[in-house]
Image 1 (cartoon, rainbow, N blue to C red):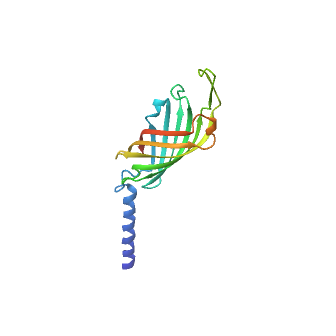
Image 2: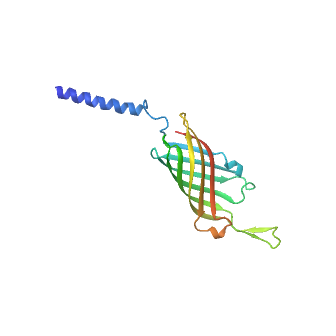
Image 3: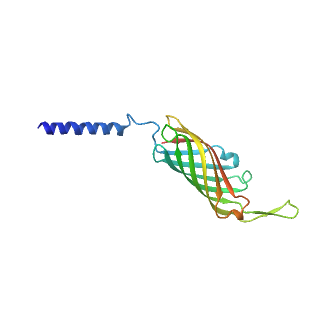
Length: 181
C-alpha cells in the first residue's frame, strides 16, 4: 500500500511540473517560433518585401522573403525575388541580437541593354532568371509584446546567367518591423 501511495505521489509531482510548463506560467516571453516582417526600405525602391521566419531553437532559424516591384520607374533593373535563408543568432535572448545568414535566391532581372551609336537610346534584351548564393549579417531586437525590429545587409552573386544581364551581384538591405507569434 505504501509503494502504491508513493508511486501515486511521484506521478502526480511529474504531472504537475509538466502542466506548469504547458500553461506558460514559467515560459519565456521571447520564445515564440514564428515571425512575419515587412521591410520599410523597399517602398523607396518602388517595391514591397515581406518575410516569414521559423525559429528552430535559441540560436538558429529558417526563413523566406519575397520582393516584388510595383513601380518600374523607381526600380528599373530588378523585377522580383524569392529568397530562402538560414540564420544563426549570437544574442543571449531567444533568436535575437547579432546574426549571420546564408541565403539562396531565385530572381528575375532585366536583360542586358544594348545602346545605339549615339548612346541616347538602347534596346533591352528579355528578362533574365537566375539563382543567387550569398551571405549577410544583421541585428534583431524583440520586445516582450512580440514586436520585432531588424536591420540587415546581404551580398550575393548570380550563378548562371550573369553574362546575359548588366548585373552580376545582388545586395539586399533591410530595415524591417514585424511580429513574433
